[in-house]
Length: 124
Length: 372
Image (cartoon, rainbow over all chains, first blue to last red):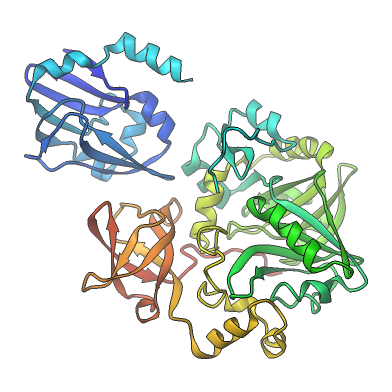
């Protein structure tokens, strides 16, 4: 299973044709306390780089973009009752949604773990 | 107000090194490099202030003395508050108004005996000082205090904490001033603040600020709190933020700040915009600042459109976010007067989607000012 990252700090965990999407630990630490997540409806078609979800911290709302194009197959309902999961488990239980990946070649343009780590260090 | 031109170097307060040492996240605010939050985060800082005591650096705000024969009479030509009626050592919240009845800034005025002591907003201070200097020329001397720091100690344990250093602090009246010494350091303390909690503001020389802050932070129950929590605390308390909830295009009547217009000033007038403001008082304004409670958990932010049941836009949110103590979203905004009654159902247009909300009384959490 591979995990890839976008420059906008989303991650996508790839398992065959299914991708699970969330925001990185770095992103949650920058956002601060998450109080609400607006998730996409199951069945929605997402385009790569298009708005897919919204995460609201105490201070501000931030858009979450789709790392690759695809169709939403599941939304993490646990975030409805416990949005703080995004802070405590950004890259595990705090996932946002799952999609069927429309075009696996889009994954090639994303960063792997090491490249993302270097990218984040460059932002500091 | 948080916008910053990168070409202009940021100013720092006398507590800047301490904020950095405490690992604050620093952001540009009103021309200053200020702590928006510490490692605990806004939510915990907010709840800590409501439960115990929070220490805020508000040294970016402007402190000004008005010195002269009758500074109260002079200041009353610029604000609608009852300044002449302020007893010695008492303070009041008031507004600089313009000729159109709009608000130039909000401020705290204290009768310090031989002078008036003013605290004004950071982003407005230069403009306020120029306004005072130009308008009151020949009547009073306007003395900015750029070498003074200001801290706020807020929360239910603030009185007990400060009384360990200044015993008389415990019994000070709400909205009063006390010149005192804190571990031998001269300070001016007022029992005031902008969080809805009991608490104090402490003015001192810049050089003394860090020693006082460190002494307070060493006390059990006191944590450093950033501007992020300061904003959510004042929003829950239903208090206006200048540049957002009140501006040059909002009048005190529209802003639901009639309580700042005392009987004598209403009868006498004599402040900028009095004609418009007094007419609105008599006849009512066409719009009003109200509290708003969105249904559910989703916050609605500043500039969100407010619609009536028919989908007509009737106003806009001026401050909005998540209230940690209210444990839900809270907001304030302006609506047309027909929709201003508490309980009125409205719709907020959040990113193109309708979010049901109701007009709600403010404050969103009970105020806990010390009433003696």
